[in-house]
Image (cartoon, rainbow, N blue to C red; front, side):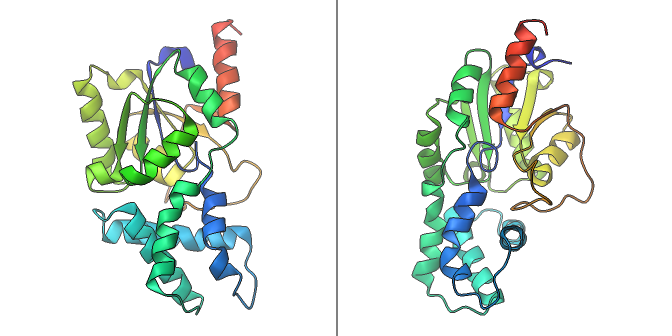
Length: 241
């Protein structure tokens, strides 16, 4: 199996193309600055992962900005920190300020020459529009949690995407799902019979960071530590290496 066997790359955005962990940590700084006992980077991210995934499961149709506001309040309560609602709302809107990884835009421009590029993301459309500006690419299709009414890893999100792609003449066998999160993406990709590529951004870190640990480790077909490494692998493939 080679990268050149596929026609369509479907992408998770946050954690894969956008550096959401740095964005989360920056957004939570008003809370972490008040902690009597400092927490590690991963402790903060794991707390966020728990409340985000719990809220997504409880209120699957809630807009992501509004959902993050609730996550902020839940974290503040756990850490015994007083916050007002406007501070929570401000955090929910912070997705628009999250930066792209340094290699994302250039990698997408290269891959656009050879593949249709599609986004399947746990986000609202307004926030993604701001992220898309940072990525600087016109995707062939964009499917958000706001469009679908649920959040990955819900089966409905992948069902929605595959049905929509089928309407565009795309066969599932030609799709490679490209993502960092084992919990949100690779496990449901396995369950839907999709080949997948792991962009292992956290390869130098322990644990799962801002994503929940999956109950079982899914399989994947390719693994690269960055989008730049994926591009290089594709170039090597074209050269027959």
